[in-house]
Image (cartoon, rainbow, N blue to C red; front, side):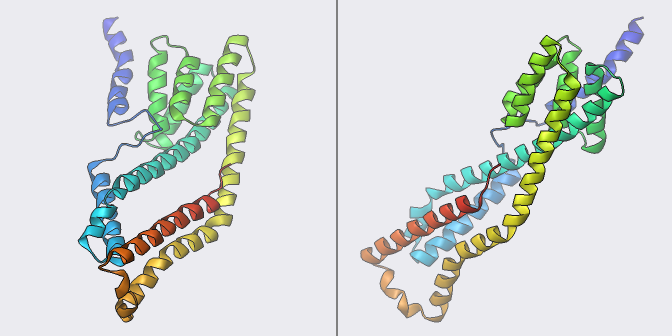
Length: 269
């Protein structure tokens, strides 16, 4: 009897490494690896060096721009968070589709989430965030923790509005005896429609975003071109306080224009 009990617990023990292996369960923050830090800091120093040479042609200009390094790192982290959340939402949509299919086939709610775990493990792999979430939730259910509580915890950590709405509705439906199949299906359809709309917007705005990037880089290319071909036109702006003040004002306006351009082409659904 004891051997059978140990045998049934084996899969649970095998899940533990997948849950703990370098996984940050907060989706509103980005943890950079050593390689990410090297690439991010290296890119930041290259940009700072290029801008300081074009606008100041002085080592002191680079020192002046060093405070922008944390801003660039923060920007990089925000991009990583947005990318991870977008991937998580797509994975959650696929998870709901799997759960809905299992429920339609007559499985119980708990077994439906376990079946979704197998599907996610097969299609997305053990390193996908949704796979790890299902591993954690199904393992916790074995210790008599309610699924609705686990979903609410996941929803709060995900920072995704669709997941949070689903967690709240799922909790009320589970307690009040609502139609869980319909709730899951409606949530899946809503996320699918939202994703499709975002893809259409992304496709439509792709050319505009490329134009925005080209226009953002154009002033640097102009300064670089003039600096190599007709440097005497810019010599008056280098090596004196007034010229440095003028170039600093131009740099601030340049950075502001980049920020405004990014906001214009960024459309959130």
